Image (spheres, rainbow, N blue to C red):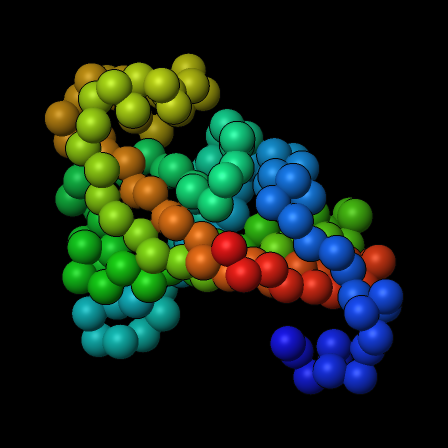
Length: 151
C-alpha cells in the first residue's frame, strides 16, 4: 500500500485486475525494462512487447543472447517493467522475476513480422532468445486513482 493510499477507503482505490492490466498493456508497444547491472546499479532500456499480450502475469520479449539485458537477467532475475499511456494519464509498474528462454516453438508462437526490424534473420536465428518476466506485483496510477495487485 502506498502512503497516498493509506488514508483512502476501499471504495476510493482503483480495483486492479489482470483483465484491466491486459487492456492497458495491449495498448502500449514499448515499455522500459529495468534490470540490475553487475555493479548493482539499475539499468533501463526500451523493449517492445509488440502488443502481443494475452496476459496472465507473464511478459515476453525478444532479445539477442549476448545483449546486456540477457546477461543481467541471467545474473540477477529481478526486473521491473514500466508502461505509460501519457495521453490517457495511465502508468503501470510490474515487478517480477526474469528468465532466459531458448524455445524455438515459443519464439515461433510469439513472433511478429514487425520484429524483423530488430531481428532480420527471424526467430530461427540461434542468437535470438526470449526473456520471460513473471510479474509478482503490479502498481497502477491514473486519472481514476491508484492501485496495486499482488499477482
